[in-house]
Image 1 (cartoon, each protein chain N blue to C red):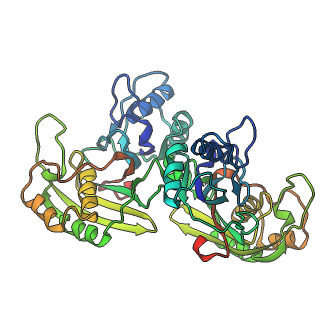
Image 2: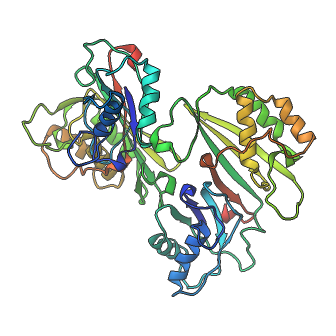
Image 3: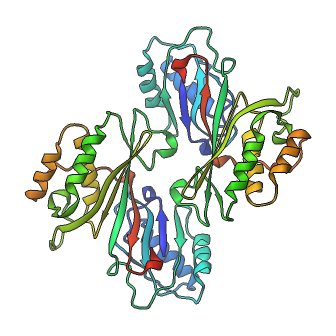
Length: 247
Length: 247
């Protein structure tokens, strides 16, 4: 199931007692359609409080024998307006939304002007100071490839796994006052996209140079040189799978 | 003053007792900055309930001697988040936001897909059925020029003035699932943009032909062939003035 949501109104993806989460909301909708039985959904990964999605993916053992289209309509009839089922496809019983994911694409949106138009206020980071987009593009190019991205991540707690990832794309798309950072990798560390965005923003403001970014890759330590950019500009855009029909 | 607002939370532009309007909200902000004195602002024209703006313009006799930038900051510090002052410029005492306007540009946004992503739900008309964009473009071309647009307008009450207008641009811009109707004229009749959008949508659904649109121009009567499209997709984008510094 491909899901879009307005993250500003949720305490993130993962179900937690007493707070409103996207997973909790979707599981409640399934449960209603299953006559009250508990239903567990399995996401491609978590998103943090305030992070939006256009293409989060989860799998579920369907509690009823609906067609894909009927599932979409039934769920959207129950879900609140800030969560929408975009697409439903049938998969093999072995499919797993998290373990089978081959990569993800995030997009981080900035409005570079003195004032953010109100209709965009929930989905843009407003940056008043003029940004040096050429430097931000040079910085982005320096970060592409397979590296230890520890300098661009935070510790979520728990055992530390490998911090090596392959960043396949990292590009700034500019249109009028909007700047969009497109980031695509085999996987992302905790807070990685927002710290990449934060470091590149500092580059655009002249506070970090592209060679500083290269140094942070060569010398992977957690510090405060790559600040975590706010969640409101960030969208989980797409999750990639091997099966062509899922992309 | 160039103003942007999220119209979904207002009962239109014009001040009215007991309801929340954009003009009322802005006049209240000015009044606070004027130590409680009443301040009247003069818009380029009204917008209806639910219609958004990126570039509404009003003029005002400033109640204090602030610089343009200071006015912008002071007003944005008081206004609610859904109204933002984008730009402030000093004009001659003779300038009038309504009488000096030489034209307006509106944009109407459609999301042509089964489901509208939640972050766009307040600013797109969702259309599930596939639209024939070529027919919609042919229809738009047929409407450009100086015509009696009575068939594409509603009666606001009060005396009827001329229903002849010059439509300078009427273009569909397509990007992925978004269709945007850009409409520019010397002035617009009541409900005119939404009825142009409604008629062109019916054209895209095969219910009206471009020659039907030509007939509605030749035979100007109010009927129901050009339905009023919902407000949520519509933005007042720009108001044009002779002074180059205002555009």
